Length: 106
Image 1 (cartoon, helix red, strand yellow):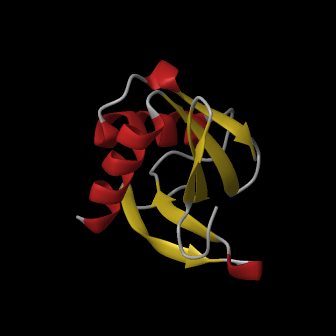
Image 2: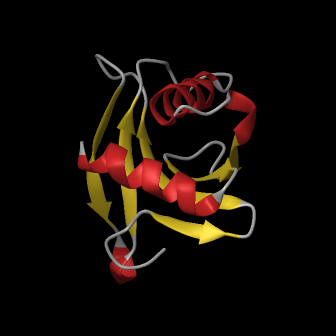
Image 3: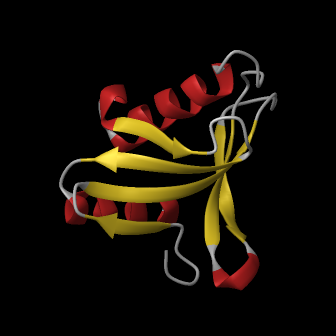
């Protein structure tokens, strides 16, 4: 990740840093959270509780819908049981980055 951007290009897609907030009143994308050392993460709130992977399933479904991807193209690389997650989006990297940038800017 470069400073201020919560995503980076990887050989088979895009890696997206996310700060997930479960048990929200609604499922929404927030802004960019600035982390230590100039890193950034996209804030996402979901209504699902952090029980039995429900919040993880909800964030994958939300990203799939918003970015027009299949849920099978999205996986959580790290942070399965944490609020800070590293999510992998499989596909054409430059095209996925364009989708993510347009979605964040919207």
